Length: 244
Ligand code: BJW
Ligand code: ZN
Image (cartoon, rainbow, N blue to C red; front, side, top):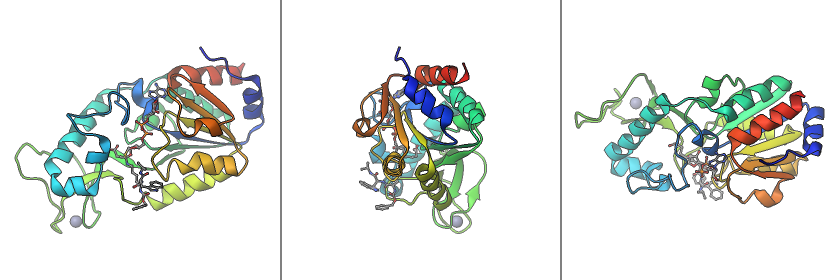
């Protein structure tokens, strides 16, 4: 068990603005596979081979199969102590922004409120061509993939490599990162941009940078405090110390 530094607790007690970036690691303890860990492969494919516009164009049925598999898995899991600790953390600060790269909706289900979803939400669909939102489930078993009235293919409303992130969310995320007095990067390999730039930007603007991750990342050397371990164990310890 990693002891939480007293100085970090003091810094958090004085802070008014806190920002957090989460990645797939925070949902790992709920049973959601990460992208780049040992569990990161689906069939024989890596995320980089499936989460792209080219993959969807080449083989939309395969990409849909991956998303329907994950949609089903994510609908059956529950938030874990890491998600709930972030809800408690939000209640301790006036200005708290939770920036997530995850599409699983577990932060909202846990009760977090001020959430910025940078990479979309796996439960939603949209038209590839005109962007119109499409409700409900998608059935790929009939062989024909669903299409919009405009002729465009229906796709999951997530952000693939080479696509722009939702402008409002990424703009607010940069703003919150630049203003944060403490920034926590949790359960992310910190290699996918622009999300990976946020902790660096926070540190550049004077934030105390905290990393909580199972493995070292490119961010570890830059962090003021780096805790190597499970977010579902370390975050509740931070919350307990803050409340005592
Ligand atoms: C635990 C744990 C436990 C485990 N407790 N920890 C600048 C430099 C270089 C490249 C680029 C750049 N700017 C843009 C790019 C290109 C590209 C990019 O970043 N490529 C890199 C791979 C090099 N970025 C983009 O294309 C982005 N768009 C963009 O920039 O638009 C402008 C532009 C357009 C065209 C050209 C150039 C610029 C879009 C990125 C979209 C990413 N999409 C995905 C899929 C989302 C939908 C879906 O879910 O299917 O997002 S890919 C995937 O990676 C997903 C994740 O959100 C994202 C990050 O992964 P994450 O969350 O960090 O997961 P892992 O698995 O990598 O790490 C988990 C970590 O948890 C590990 O470290 C474990 O140790 C740890 N862990 N259990 C704590 N219990
Ligand atoms: Zn359309």
